[in-house]
Length: 280
Image (cartoon, rainbow, N blue to C red; front, top):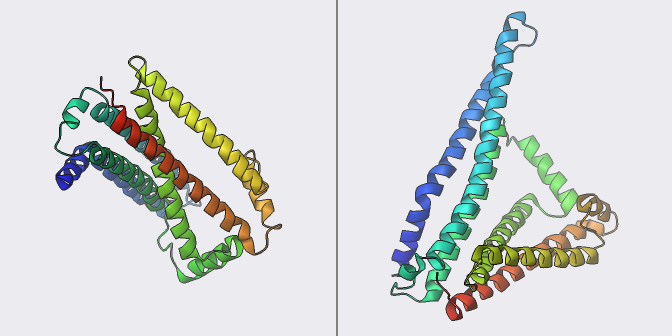
């Protein structure tokens, strides 16, 4: 039954989110072809190419605008769609059908959360991939460039390139999971109210956000960084902490925080949904 429930959830959410992700990749591929073809054919010393170059500039702006709109739509629509679907199928009118399934409430909750985190990760991964496709050159991974990138990464952060990419991947996963679970925990708190559920959920989200900001301010302060102009201060810390150990502490701190947030938000969802379910 669990497999069928997962299959149904991914199939239902994939009907909208799957084509949207593919459309972004398509836009990036078309944009890459158009932009690089224009750069190759443009000849600024040829007077006959002035009209063509002007048209190409307009087309480039149009392609970039469409790409930006698509990537923005992908992230926002994914977040909004998953939020609305989670609320309706868990705490709204559709919840009566959801909670009559021959599986535990915990299983249903886990499936919903897993699907939501998965699609948010896919959206961010597709966004990064599409950006690379749009901007990559003919040979972006030549040995000289890659070697320089490895050396620079090791010198600046103290991590080998492969390790840094792995850490960034873990960071993205934990942040996405934390964000999704924070929204779901807010919705779980909102459904406790008989009236003004959405307002209560928004209020809970704001409270969670403020608490996180305070904790982040205190934790960054432990590393000698204020949230305002944090990147510039982080760069300055490199001269204080030898061997780029500052980045080691910073990445570990952020990942630990996000995991802690995710666990807390999950427990809120779990206990409220299991003990205090209040359907419309």
